[in-house]
Amino acid sequence: MCDSCGNQKQNGIAVGKIISHREKFYKNLIWVVDGARLKRDYPRFLKGKNAFRNVKKGIYRVDFPEEYFPSDWLESSVPVIFDLITEIPRKAFINTVISREWVVRIKYFLKNKIMQVI
Image 1 (cartoon, rainbow, N blue to C red):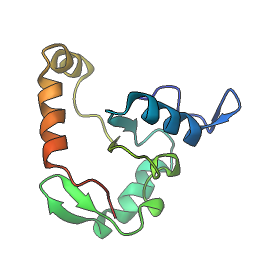
Image 2: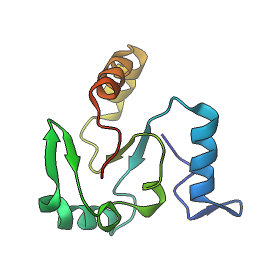
Image 3: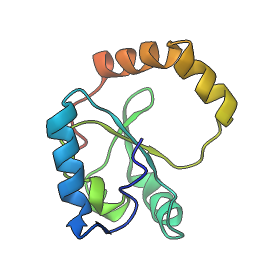
Image 4: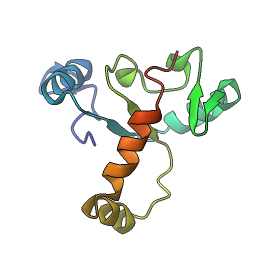
């Protein structure tokens, strides 16, 4: 999860550069981003929800992602999951990580995912 990428610049470095450097360094990475961090993020997403086309259960395609998602993440070379409303209690999430159940879910997601939202 990216906690230091929330600002447009971090120590004078553009967020896009931070994201790119981390992706190159870690390679096997999935971002889980707070998709409702700014006041306008969630309403912007809701505005476009009718434009999303279901490709597979839980996976959607959208033609103009820049209209609905935070721009800092659109050029990511790895999967980005936008957490728009956290419905999993923090303790439950931590338990799934500790038990490695989260790893199983991520591996399943990667095995069955579509590489890019076009």
